[in-house]
Picture 1: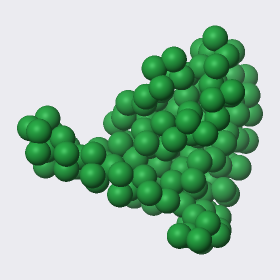
Picture 2 (picture 1 turned 30 degrees about the vertical axis):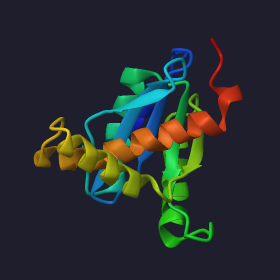
Picture 3 (picture 1 turned 90 degrees about the vertical axis):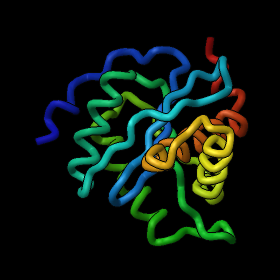
Picture 4 (picture 1 turned 90 degrees about the horizontal axis):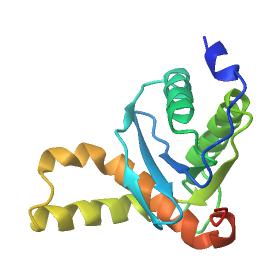
Length: 160
């Protein structure tokens, strides 16, 4: 079923980053380039199984050819591993097997959902977002994960 993902990956476009906010029902996606220092949300993946998520993410990675994939890691408030963070790590291992030429890293995502909701509320107040745009919150969270990763890893984002 995933054989298409096992093809050799072409050299990635230098600097393009893909952010993932893993969720059991909806997985947020964002794309960024370190030169801008900001990320933009993509359409979220609505998949009810890891198999469906893996298949969809393989296609996204094939289309965007990121030089780095950054997955939000949902740690506890104290920074400890949680059941969900272990599930994210397991999912990342399976994804890495499907796209062996693409580095996958993690970023602490403890406050990204709150930040995404605040950003959405602010945009609604300014008249730049509608309530129906709330379904994009997971992808907004993915963009915040990427922006935070770029701030924490400036040396890894300046390969131009």
